[in-house]
Amino acid sequence: MRKPDFFIVGAAKCGTTAMNDYLGQHPGIFVPEAKEIHYFGQDLDIRTARPRDTLESYLARFEGAEAFARAGEASVWYIYSRSAAQEILEFNPDASVIIMLRDPVEFMYSQHSQAMHNALGDEDILDFAQALDAEEDRVAGRRPVPAQTTFPDGVFYRRIARFTEQVQRYYDLFPRDRVHVIVFDDFRADTAAAVRDTYRFLGVDPDFVPETPVVNPNKTYRSWAVRKLQQRIPGKAKDLVPAAVRRRASDAIYAMNRAYRPRDKMDPALRLALQREFASEVAALGDLIGRDLSHWSKA
Image (cartoon, rainbow, N blue to C red; front, side):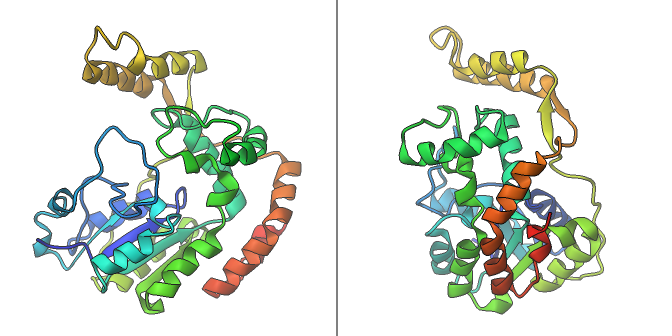
């Protein structure tokens, strides 16, 4: 069966959902219906209702891909994993890697919002500054992460924003011409150009024009009281109501209560403090990928 030969490895909140969609529209590219499969990265503590894929079930996701020039998938925590790069290399030594990055301060703020507003609710500290303050205790186990979280490390905001060492793992294992780095600033400023460059990188027709609607916009809730009710449904009356029924009820309430609107602006003092904290990280990342990213560290 056809093995995937390219991987969007992350990072989260950097445009990967949109890029996966735009690649999947190309007549020469096959992507499976599911995103965030996370077959690789055996060190990742992914907690989902479905069991982790076996090799057989993973490859079955690419049934029908033989007719396409390229086949690949997107799982955003591959970049954070310490083992995924090596696992991908051993699985397919000829694989191509796509990495999407953004300003780590913006990334952390966006990730916090995502963690609060996803279906299960990975984050229970609603204030971003307070969530950052809780990180050290969470990492040390002195403060638990929310019981329902699907990926505990996803609320270790400073850790997951250290992109330099994450990108370095892929540069250490794959030839540079098989690692394509996309800066979110470019992707947002000229999406069509960024997609064409990625088509070129994958060796497919760069002149194909996909539909490019906004994908995965910022989420919020109409009512936090309803949100708390929805989170309790899967666990309530578990001896009386089948799990599948409870989950469908929870999902339906989540969908009705969900809304989309831009995030509030980050507190300027907090932004400045984080920019200073991450200035050396930003400089190192820029040196690594050969890009001046100094504007990320400027007020």
